[in-house]
Image (cartoon, rainbow, N blue to C red):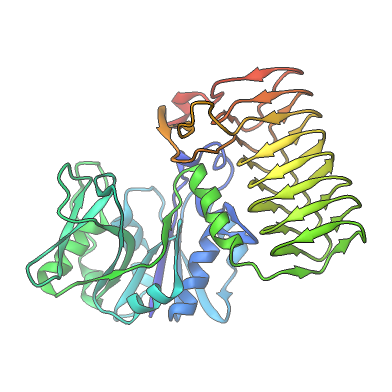
Length: 402
């Protein structure tokens, strides 16, 4: 089945992590988020991938090249992000006159359910949630077929939400010239509505699915994929280091003396841990990253080149590329009142739904020695703190989130 993967957007809700790369290229374990989407598609039956790119397109192009696991890869450019129907229209010239799949490149799908979707024409992927009003909700007719999607309804017609995955008949390639929606976008759900008028469209339920739109969902994505790790030690591990649970130490990585790592954890090539460091929970130590003496890292993602040199604590956090923690930097990751930690997203304070959640730092942010960072704080790309500074509130300009 020919497959279109949508990967053109920046992902403003993920800022500051997307200041210098598109959201689909953010790391989830050992590869970008969109690569997990592509690999799941290939395993489910994709015979050709067309990846729609836009913001920072070269990052996507250079990662994939012209094939993935023997499946040819083409690229289509969405010059301006005008909506999902417009994105698929950008890819239409690369499609044969056959049914086609469309997948969001910023979501994770379980492969068995995705395989079922690929075997069903036409179809839309669905997922059951407790709070459907926050999503596009699938409306079904009396025969159980999908009749359309209702966006964020006050009174949802069902608990089934649109999982951003579709199998369209070949004719749908001619239905992409839709009218602009109330949101000012060209919506693929309008193409789905036309398909529902012409065909019986089935809902295929996903056993597991995750829309990765905000930083804490990137943590959740890494937790999911780290749970699937097969332990492997290819790098240099000291004889007196203690590794337990599923731990991967890639070739070229170094784990020094006195280190304790409790998996699931991934230490990528070129990374160093220790001496005398403690890594636990679902943690990724990215390529070339450094976890130094007497540092504890728990349930966090350290991207390429991030350094937590010594005497620091990082919990439930995401550190962007080449972040540097001054000695003694501490991250708070728990509210004393037991409520979920909240974080600013596009100027609005939003609950993460996580009782434990730390900080998000943009690329090349630096902290002075003995800095304290409050739970839910974001520091901007290239941001800095002073020695002994306590950062209690978000440091990103809300205007720049628009």
